[in-house]
Amino acid sequence: MTDIARLRADRIAALPFERVEPTAGIAQGTSHALRQLWRYRELQGLLVRRELKARYKDSSLGFIWSFIRPVMLLLIYYFAIGYFLQAQRSIPVFGIFVFAGLVLWGLYSDILVAGTMSILTNAGLIKKVSLPREIFPLASAGSAFVNFLIQCAVLIAAVLVFGQMTFTWDVLYVFPAVLLVMVYGTAFAILLSALNVYLRDIQYLVEVVMLMLFWTSPIVYSYRMVADVIGGTWLEAVYLANPITVAILSFQRAVWLPSPSVQSQLTEMGIDPSTMHPADLDVRILVLLIVGLLLLWVSHRTFLRLQGNFAQEI
Amino acid sequence: MASSGSPAVDAPLVVRLDGVSKHFVVRREKSLKERLVNFGRSRRHREDFTALTGVGFEIPVGQTVGLVGHNGSGKSTLLKVIGGIIAPDAGVVERRGRIAALLELGAGFHPDLTGRENVYLNGSVLGLSRNQIDEFFQSIVDFSEIGEFIDTQVKFYSSGMYVRLAFAVAVHVDPDVLLVDEVLAVGDEPFQRKCMDKIRQFQSEGRTIVIVSHSSDQIADVCDRVIVLNHGHVVFDGETGPGLEALAASFHTPPPGPAPEEQP
Ligand SMILES: Nc1ncnc2c1ncn2[C@@H]1O[C@H](COP(=O)(O)OP(=O)(O)OP(=O)(O)O)[C@@H](O)[C@H]1O
Ligand SMILES: [Mg+2]
Image 1 (cartoon, chains in turn green, purple):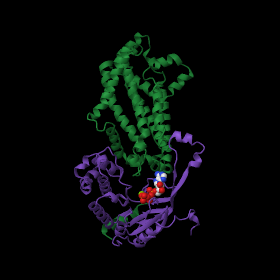
Image 2: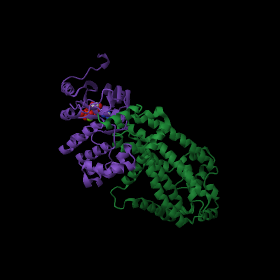
Image 3: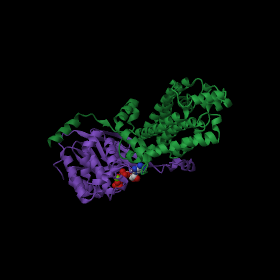
């Protein structure tokens, strides 16, 4: 026996035995899972970069595409729909309004669609190495977030060009808006990614349901129009229970509503600007955030329970 | 038989398995349509397949174990259970030390990334920090001999190049336990020789190795011990020479009885 071998044997003899089971997370709890995630943070970063790269792989313009798409969308909504279809008449600076909603919605839909697929798209890794598997839906959320930041750069530029922004503290509503979307998006992505391993239809279902959900949030129409029709009824309560709706309302309040041209045009139309969102927005944000964090915890527990058989099912 | 690498009698254990069983549900419907069409019949349609039955053994530090058996005998499944990639249905698997696994042709590589990016991805999967990988990087490329292809997407690699890179990464992460599943088969002769040399070096450094291989020569060459699987049962566990004879015999014997608990 060589010295180096003896040293190794001594070192190993001093280590405790660890039970190997991919489902260990259940018994050991959330804090253990979080420590594991922290240990793999570098890998997490690599996976996010990989997803971003894979998105525009082999294209010669590469990352520039992620700017071109939102700019085109913005121009279409600003001119074609805002002016030619006259949406501008009921919603001032319609281009910014709709683009703000679309960008935030895009974040949510990106997280959900990519997150749901994430376990299957990373089958190669999952079948070969033992890892905390939550990192795959989390990496999808991370790369969706980076993409969102890029689009936000376009949004900020547009606000400066079209909206003549003035500073108000309402701009802080950006944070709860993004947080709500991240929390709910991640919670659903973790849950659906695990279910999708056992029932492959989930990924198609998600795409269809997202198409429908798009219209249940005030993205291309305003909350005011909804309140005019169902204001004060239980339907409105249901409508506002949607966390993404509340997130979009606070996002609009941060980036669209404070603009002086929006304010003056609304007043001209005889609309009180503060009725563009529900009066108790702050409370709703808080309640939905707490519910969202609980949901995140529950879906993580479910994920841990289901992940033991991932490698053999994909 | 390589007696030089045999561990001392009192060597500490690194891997401990006890009563490990694994069955797979085959023909389970994964789409809604299949589930609806087979609704009701679904229960009867499920078929359980037992891949491992009551497997138990201990591996001391520094031992090189050859895991052999016919196709479908459960070797890869057993290696994945040890590696913590699939969960056993029953039994206990315990392990200590850093582990690196090369399972069924290669580590987890992503086809769209270059070799270089995959080295970093794989290194961090195996628990290395970026700085540590920087340190090993050149040595990994040198060992794999893939040269300038390191900056090509791995989907354009030949299967030999793929395995070369995977093997090079796995042997550079300083594992205490190395699990190798048939990866050496696709390498050309010089590379196979290089791998065997590396394995011998690992033995002298007191690392523990579990090799799955269909090449009796390779097994006889490096292993201290052979475990023979037959339809998920361990039918032999011991010295290499008799082990390879038991392997040859197992090809002609029917699977061990359906109710193993009735056996002595
Ligand atoms: N994910 C899975 N789902 C269903 N059955 C599986 C799965 N993985 C393996 N099996 C079955 O388990 C049995 C053992 O497979 P395993 O891959 O362990 O065999 P092996 O000994 O490695 O064979 P080979 O020498 O061909 O590599 C096989 O009959 C296989 O069909
Ligand atoms: Mg195999």
